[in-house]
Amino acid sequence: MDDHSPTFSRRNFLITSAAAATAIGARPELALAGDSSTAPISEAGQSTARVTLNVNGQKHTLELDTRTTLLDALREHLHLTGTKKGCDHGQCGACTVLVEGRRINSCLTLAVMHQADKVTTIEGLGNPGQMHPLQAAFVKHDGYQCGYCTPGQICSAVGMLDEVQRGVPSHVSADLVARPLLSVDELRERMSGNICRCGAYSNIVEAITEVAGGAA
Image 1 (cartoon, one colour):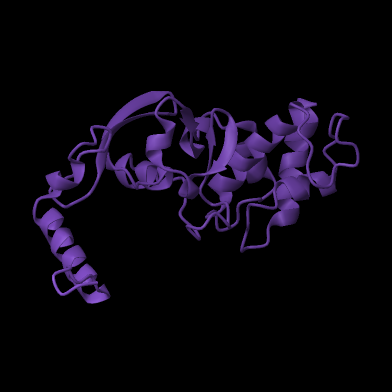
Image 2 (tube, rainbow, N blue to C red):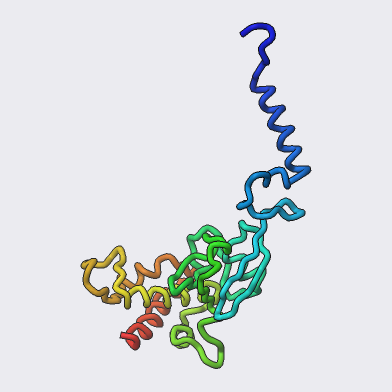
């Protein structure tokens, strides 16, 4: 390298990068140049999107940060607080809802991913005057106790019974091609993603078993 060649060092690279980042921070529209697919940037520097959610049979159009989880959209924006925020890491199951009839942890998925999907929360399953059979069974067998995990438990049980009807095997299914029989072992395995700190598991098993027997 001769004396007239530009000097490129780690120090110069960091200085240049910092200057570029400062310029984009002052003018966020620079970050969008040449990329028409990028979501707009709000005044707070957030990427936002208009999202239409079909929740419990009603459509709701929201302007959301694209990082908003389905759980936060339901609780904070639609005020459907029956769905609970427990661990916020997909480990406790308190946030379980039904999306197109399938149970999912709503804390692990983004609201913008469910524009055309039908979302059902605990509020959409039944009401005090006309409860869902699983809601009634939980009351009958005292499967709710403190009640915090109950919305997720019930939504998960609805999805689980649908899985059994469709012949979806579990980790304890002896025959992967035969129609699953909802034994206690099967039920406990399929509901293992929903944690109850009160320890009402035996009552929950009884409640689900009663409904499953009636649906068989």
